[in-house]
Image 1: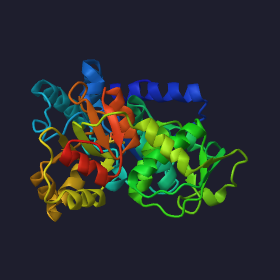
Image 2: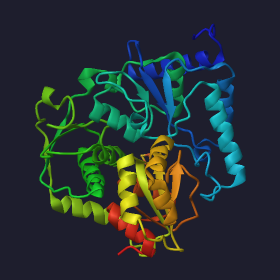
Image 3: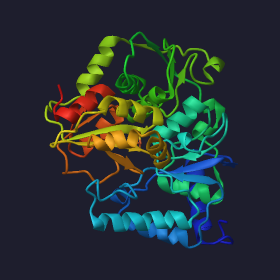
Image 4: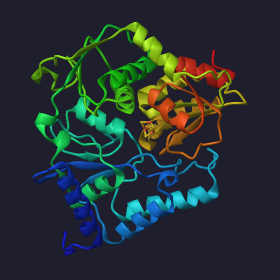
Length: 389
Ligand code: F3S
């Protein structure tokens, strides 16, 4: 491949993988079960990225199951979300390039909910940080946090360099985090991720003191803990796989209710008027959409506010079947499939945002928005009144 015997894309890919292997001291390549490619939004790629993808699409064909991270727009409903025609044309060219490569156009950061579900111990090359953290921690698969090009390279070769989180000895927890705080709503998991991310500082947390967690809470925690500092791997004793194989590390920190309170005060800005409410970071599960529908039924979104539900297209299709879509849209809400508040071109469009997600707040601040984080109930209230109270 490196000599170009399998074409241009394979040669480029091997150049990327062998360079990474050299940098990180990998002794070999290992097979990957699936790939998840980030760097899909034209907003982030620009023309240079589009050109790079078109070159690879000439003869590059993926060798393993490969799915995509969110794009810069809803691929069907972009007009409704205020995306310009010029942007849509370019975004569609990006998607066409991925299609030619044989990639499944799933456009979600929750691939594990819609058909790209790895098994325990499987090696992967995934890119999006919350998905990588979920795969490593909640499923017990093994993946580094790939960049867009290195994930694509792994897809064309079917292998990735064996270093970092592919090695058992690099997956040993190095900080014990004892939780003494109570977690009562979804956003508390985002706040917890903020606190642990800051306290763990690029270490692997071994967490005790949590006795139950559902998939939505864990995916929210995954997004936050890696955004705010920790490695894309954690263990929760009694909840996630692999914790029983390790002893609690000697270095120990506590998380108490006050820490969560402080996290909320750091994540929340001064805004009272809310211009955008977005729930679905990571992308909403069908269970989360059901809760939104139940809470918004019979209400009306304020004329001053947009209310977006970000999710994968298959989750939206389930919502269509169950009538949740009709309820949410009747109230004035909009579905943002295939995309999210971080990768859509939102800079300058909204001054303030309310969301359930700590990660969503992090990226929306970068897009110039004042942020508020709270429960689904508080977010729906903000959508209806246009205010955060
Ligand atoms: Fe997913 Fe976008 Fe959040 S990629 S984790 S919804 S910032």
